[in-house]
Image (cartoon, rainbow, N blue to C red; front, side):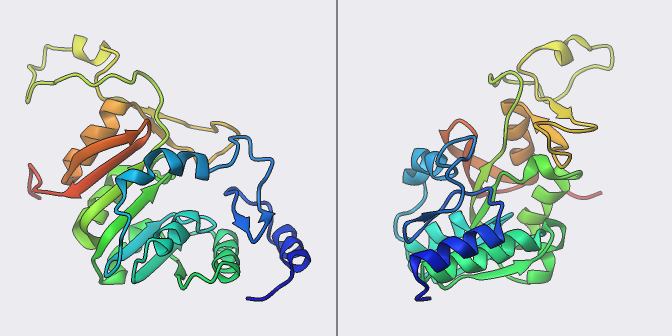
Length: 242
C-alpha cells in the first residue's frame, strides 16, 4: 500500500476509534491512549519470552483487535498468521494496518467458541486480553486445548484481587469453608454490569485463579514474564470427560 502519510492519517480517523496504538508509517492510531503506547509498552515487557524466529511456524491470534500482535508475529517470520475477532470494526482496522505495513496476514470474523471450525492446529496461539470479556471463559480455554493449540499458548488476562499463589489440597471435607476466605485462594470476580465503563467485562480472576484455570484446561505454565502474561505449553489434562 503506497498511500501518502496524509491519506493514512485520514483513514485512521475514518476507521476510529482505535484501542490499539500502532505506528502506521509515522501515523499513530491511538496516541492519547489512557495506558500510554499500548499495547507496545506491554509487549516490550514480555517479547523476549516469545521465539524471535518463527520461520516455518503458524500463529493464531484470538481477539486480534487491530492486529498489533499479529503483525509482531509476522515480523518474526511466521509463515502463516491468522487473526480472529468478533468485532468487524476491529477487523477493518487490522486489515488496513497490516496493508499499510506490508504484512501478509489473514483476518477473519469468528467467535472463540467457533475455533473448531478452523480444523487446524497452530504452533503458537495468542490469547491476549480475551478471557475476561467472555461469559464462558473456561469453555473457551477447553476449546483452545482441544482444537487449535499445538504447542505454545501465550495467555494474558486482566487480574484483580490478591496476587499471591498458594498450594491447595487435592480435596477438602464438606465442613471446610475457611479456605474460601483466604486471599490467595483461586477466585473469579463476576461483573454483573460494567467495569471500567465496559459491559463486556464479565469475569476478573486473581492470579491463582488464572493459573488454576490454565492447568485445568490442560496447559502447563512455563513462565510469567510479565505481570499478566503466562507462557504455556499444551500438556496432559488431569481429568477426562464423564
